[in-house]
Length: 184
Image: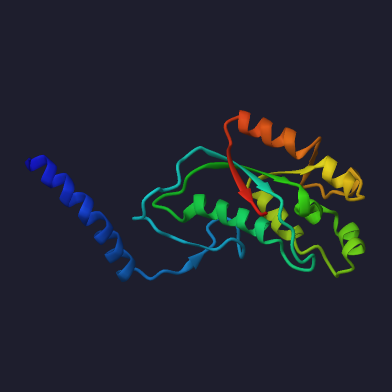
């Protein structure tokens, strides 16, 4: 009975201790690995901390305003920053992104992108470069790319052209990557 009461009081105090920590600690945004993109708050006392050696495949299909940064690709930067420093300690993570659907064309070379969308620049290019520098692998669906009237040679060097989103998602999940859908 004494053990049960000890465990019960520990369970009841943990949320209270967490809440008290939040009350007394300033919550400020930071960018542990990718500067200026994917802001996070450090929560070292929170439950469900980033697990070391996690593997994630992000299925990015949502498009957006071509003159603005795709919100899904910035969210991937947040995933990197969460594992790099939002928890109690940094945790190594392997992230792969598969672009298809309405997100297919965010990876076009700058000159091709600006011609296609009649804008000054590809607002996704810098984020994609930063993701690659952080170790994120990016793939674009070759079927979607060609279906949208573009050629594989028009994809920027930081993104690999895959046979299809289907094969990429199946292969990466078979290799142990947890599936995360961004967009619909």
